Image (cartoon, rainbow, N blue to C red; front, side, top):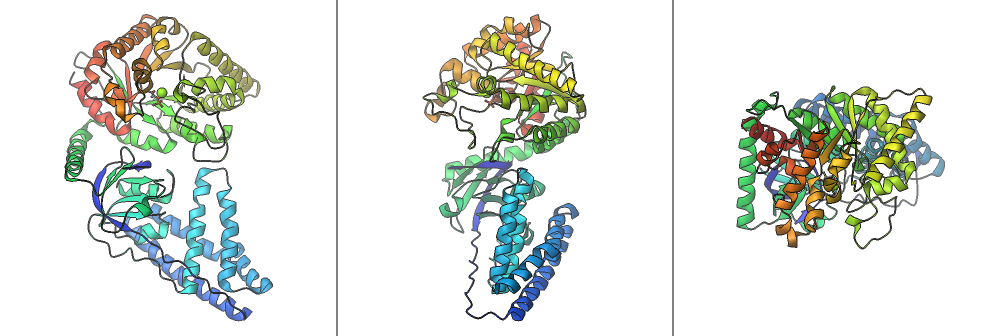
Length: 538
Ligand code: PEP
Ligand code: MG
């Protein structure tokens, strides 16, 4: 089994098509005829334009205008006097072949794009590479692999998929994508979501682990891949797939239904998100809010801390999309199993019990304040609520609230708008917090129970360790008692209590949680409708 980044959910059992690229071989020339090289370059540009126009029209007809827009930008690159001018100039001034000139200019643009702070712009380096390669292939006559003649039920496995690769695919035959590299905004991810087929990216070495013809399972929910599965696993996934589909079809009718129990109690069923784009799934599935925005993902997959402005844009985007529905933004929960390459943390014997989340933020107030300012500023654009993770004591709550207050004062003096009555809550995911929930409830507006951690800390059972997963039991009486204590403590102070750990979407646990009086259930978007159905039937 391999694990990567799940970028498009669902289950697939398909046949591998391993996309291999014929290497572009650039021959060294001893004598250069400048005029001849310029002519060759112009011919290659014409051929590239012709191919791209065909791909663009095909994409527009088969998928949509929006998806075809990327090829308009490729065509523009081929007409860009700076890009093409630089290549022609390179031939002339340095007396090099058209291939060498194009490679140099492409590399220069690639390094500019890859060095940009904005993740979206960084991903656009793939477009420059794609265009550069197309020109080179036309110059050298090396053919790109044939992805147009695929069999039914094909899972395309590639190091990376360029926009032109995906455009050439016969979409009716492709059921999934797997790539070595890529992130949530890579073309593969965008295309997979558009086509609504499962995809896992960032698998690192999937291209060297499979060959064409292998049978492969994609678990686009967990972000895992199983190569040549045995009959039992295949049957399991066939069942999962069929069950998922049948359920999806049936549940769609609940998208616009309010979540009210038989006794008339209104419940919020919300979605958990990790990136701003995830909000679309929450909306599609009728989420009544966002109960957990795991902001640490904004800090990952990059080379430096996100700026206040970048974060502000991300939070504002989500708040606006939710149109007044609540959005709980959790402050940075880094450390433990979540690491940042550019923020080296000391090696720890027990990272889950170590320097992480609010502990790190209270220590690194520069990082914390940048985020709090961004969240506050975004609160002027919707109904944002702030939540602090990994709270273990009242002192931490008071310190965090103190820093939040400082940020409010700063923003006021700068004349920047924010919601002065923003609700401030904490996660209850450490047993000590559950035990003193009665005290904590006096100082916050809400609780959200993080069962993923609460279970592991209560039962001393590492949530990542498969060997002891039998101990990791959400229905253990000790866990249930802590949950009940937390909900009761919140209600006694007139505060609401939600849950954003996986248990909230666990259909077997929902009736018990309802009975305990939980007010809000937050889960992955795909679980929302199932949970709603259980609640309205309870
Ligand atoms: C939790 O611990 O339940 C939780 C929601 O936080 P995370 O899974 O991000 O640790
Ligand atoms: Mg947690």
